[in-house]
Length: 382
Image (cartoon, rainbow, N blue to C red; front, side, top):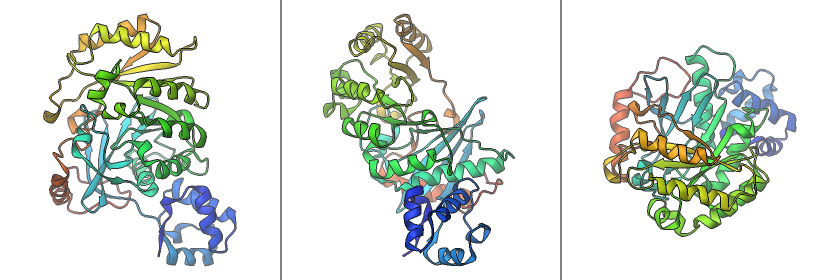
């Protein structure tokens, strides 16, 4: 039985090497070759002993996910559809900015939470991704982008677990993946620049604070339980009071001194002045005196099954002003990549249900002719 080495954080790789009779420093060398240099061929790893390279050829491999399609937006955003087998596919999105490059990564094939405003949730849930499948999205994107953009230095400076799925419902596979991202022998990302977004899985928020505290974003979307129950079904299990108490507990370990609350602006549903004032009161109730949260207002990206509409820009601005005037740091997310369905809530948005994804994969495979498994930059655009 061979192992995909993308499945291991450094500690796991050290254990793997020890089983082969190798010292820990060999795991560090191997880890650097894989993640810093993007190597998948053991013969390329010139500072590894030939005997180890021969062992590895028998018991291990390094393999990215097959790329079914790639779309590049007019604004430079890139979206990849990755094949994870058995008719399942997940998407990742790279968002370039002047001062950073952000990769949005998926943690599950589909999503079980079923938020009304998220098209991914309407696809349904298939399975959790393995650690290696989570890491493979970053591994492929980083080394593809270096060649695509003709850069030697790191391109991806920020990772957000905001793609398909609820990360904290795949906890055991998520944490090793986060450790790979943070490890100085891997991608060397700051804890402040790796963000896990959750719809509010309270027990796992507490565990993450202890095991691997990174920046935390919480999908709030409503100021009271009645409305949030309707928008985010998980609220029925972990209501707002429990969620905000967990957020305050997390702050003691978080690399930032605030929690980000994501708030999708839905016309006539949660975007009225009264909702903004309720949020102000809610935040003040759980504040210990300082600034402990910020709001990120997200323009809704409509899809037919939701029955929802996007709030008008002037309504979003008026809503933001109420929060800002109350001393709450508030931003309005700039929509990126919506011409390729890569904006927030749009991942796998044209998949109507689980039965449709096989046809989609087959259709896009036909366009692509064959999956992309290396970092060549002449990918035919779908």
